[in-house]
Length: 367
Picture 1 (cartoon, rainbow, N blue to C red):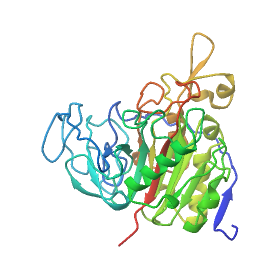
Picture 2 (cartoon, rainbow, N blue to C red):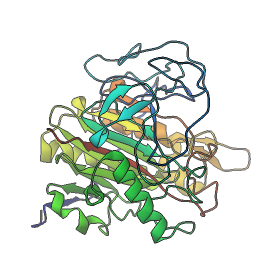
Picture 3 (cartoon, rainbow, N blue to C red):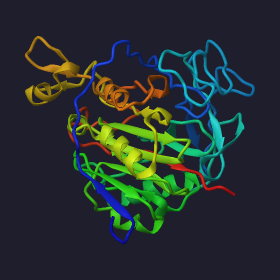
Picture 4 (cartoon, one colour):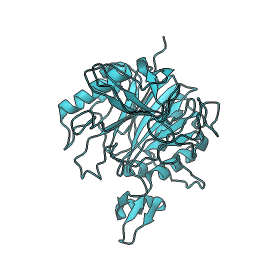
């Protein structure tokens, strides 16, 4: 580790293990549970914005944004582990909206969350529901922001001012300083940056890596996505979090397993204590790949009649997590497809002219 408090891990690729019986949350819902990935989608409305006049399907303590709800579950879902993790599986389809305070702590259930800033709403999909965490993923938001909407990396579709505005809006919405949102220069590799000092965040912006780890409260780790999968990890025992960018190349390099190895060796984490959330990504239903992917990840590819394959990145990453010792009941998968769902940026769908979402996780500072 250098004087700035950083360490870089290089890839120690391990084999993939196929685990039978893998099931995911049904399309249209997120996994609920205290301390695990929840089905909440945050709508943070800043000052001066127009009122949302859409009538919810239900009213009361839980307000649903349009999908029929079969049952209400406060905190723990059927099949969830009450120690703090939701089981992998199908849950009733519902959208629970929460209001946020500083660092994203849910302090009241009810109306959609509001945060005051200019006249723009920022929509966020929640990952973990643990009140100690701030975690989730941004959406496109083109109905509120001009194209490309909320975007967190310069691309063919977004310029530096667009990116700067998106970061400022997100920081304001989450109640953190912009300088405390840590990202890296992603290269589809397997290197991991450990942030042991918040003052070292700035020098990481151009650091070539695809995962971040921290035990520092008040620091929010972010990985940029547009079809790749974001993997968020939390160890509630050692109080450590990680954010991983895993496209097919990162999955082939087993970056998730390598991050778990660093969590164990550097922070004393046990894989069985980890909770994991997998973000929406290009799904195995439509993610067409060629022979280059099939050669290294063939067991996760389904053949097509035209000689190409459909690749299931979610399934591959879940296998890597389980092979590394993460309990399957502590893994939650948001099965939404970034290619087919216009709420998400998609490099494949938009032929390169897309923005980038940010999957993020951090631990709220204690009073």
